[in-house]
Image 1 (cartoon, rainbow, N blue to C red):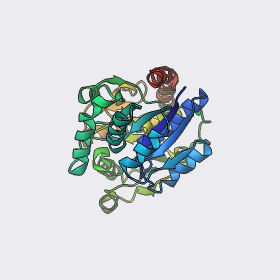
Image 2 (cartoon, rainbow, N blue to C red):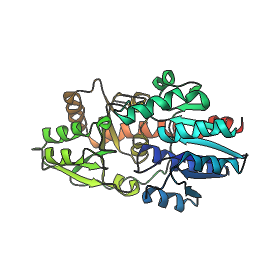
Image 3 (cartoon, rainbow, N blue to C red):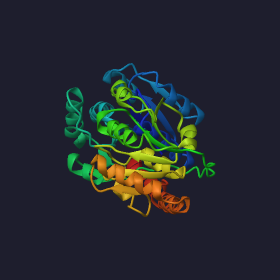
Image 4 (cartoon, rainbow, N blue to C red):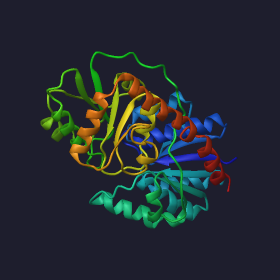
Length: 334
């Protein structure tokens, strides 16, 4: 088996970084030699620390495509698996020159604006230089040689948390336009006079100052927190994104026995079946989110547990890495 190198350019801890950790754990469980290579050092210590805990070797390049060229030319025994648009573009073009196998995972269909829009366009037009994986079927039309792969986690099966006096409703993710955190702020404001309900935002991003100005008194900002700790204080996760692939945070929430309310974007509706494995909005309006949260609040604990139990069962069957490993290893070996 050739050495697997996961290549990315990472400055925050989000869905791609969570995916990297789960991918490392999956490959380690199958004894596949795996390391992580960063395009440059953004001092992403949360990710570095998790890799260290897993005894997964990692290193940072100097922020130049030439650095990757020198890294690859010393061995023909590498398979490069890129994640994110910048690493994807640089990785594919460099592997084309050096003759290495390049596999790219496309995690989301966000168009972005300005420079990000340009990077995404380059990411798509260079897709012919790699074997490609997409985490949502609608991304297939945007890349060449694309095949669908469901995101996955290795379930931890934590013990059910002790019920708290107040109900804790959370947004977990990047505070950026595509994740629509302002919808969560508006949702919290709608319920600001309802006792024993608190709204929590976990994460950071460019919209934080704007959101803090608009937030009502029932809303708390926590910044980045270890997912191992935050799920112990979450009863309901709300995903109100404009654009998504298949959010890792959704799978993590299900594994931690958290009820999920989500917009039907990306591949979310393959995981959340309304009133069976969670609550799914029929549109992206504010009123749709309000209605679904009201539904959840009117449910008994037994009814919520029924949805969570169904979601957990589906997670173990389809999103626990079994079929994904078979699919990945075929790409790595060919």
